[in-house]
Image 1 (cartoon, rainbow, N blue to C red):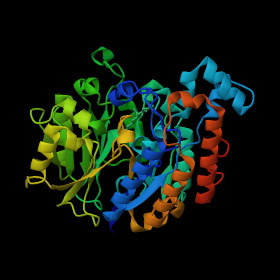
Image 2: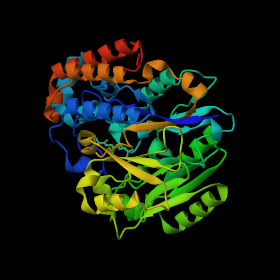
Image 3: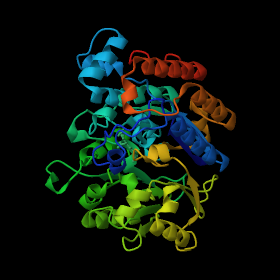
Length: 444
Ligand code: SUG
């Protein structure tokens, strides 16, 4: 049976702003409190989806979450009408407004961990929303993500959408950003590669920034999904301290290929994991040496936050890297990429650049913006078609963005109650268009 990589991108919401909310994410820190353009952000995201669609791949999307998260503000003690809540939070705790307005669900690589049916014990596709407990603005995402995933993957005979792991630091989980699948071909059984930053008892004094994924969370996901082949690999403290808050900032996999930075992993853990991967099946590590691209250059350009794709029919011999345009601007990276595509010892043959600068300024590149789901033709038919895209639907979504989004947004604009109404109107129009006006019922 043939399997296809289907990407579900996070549609960027109307409250996209630079809140400086993510510790360890250098771009978020650097751009804190600058003016964003929600309109440009969403249009860039949709153009990326169009690029991938035009290259011949299937493309879906995950809708934005309702913002502001008024139920969170109520939980935090604010009361009265919706306007009262915005006004009081705006004067007493504006940082909480930024938190509940974050459009962070756009980074769909953090929406969930996915195990394809080929790799799970019961032959179903398993999805677990990430609890994202490390940062407050992201920890509020998972109930909405769960609702959206249940709606998209709505056939329980084919899909099992689990609730998030317990919301505690011991099971801190960041989803597919720390998970990859290695396999000989899309249609053959693969190995889940789970990358983690800390485990019970880890001496975290070496870490300047939080390690967002625990080994215990990764093990729980593998157990829950009935993953038949799992390998665990430890992120290096050096990479985390340099700003690799997720594994997908320093590595990307596709088929048998793991394209990664030399300093991404703890050496001993890498040696063990790579030996296991070679034992379990075809494994082609493509290591980018620090002497050619430093960690700093890799993180600045987001080279590894590219989408690495086989041919649309699954051809593993000629892969395409969908890379952020920033890679053309960091000299060492541009030079490296030129060399890479002519190096016959590995299958990456082509680089396609996409402009997702609005998202990049918050630390999210092309790969952050998508949740990758490996599906057979029958499984694709079991996906709710409302969430699958073609060019006409992308046009319609661009039209919706143009009608409802602001050209520019400063974090202080979040204090205006009128902005809340704008966001509500945009979401109502979207869920109506989708035919799911009750998508987030009970959660708002
Ligand atoms: O969790 N940025 C996100 C970026 C996530 C990128 N995803 C992957 N690497 N898969 C994060 O750090 C910044 C929000 C702000 O500061 O306004 C933010 O949440």
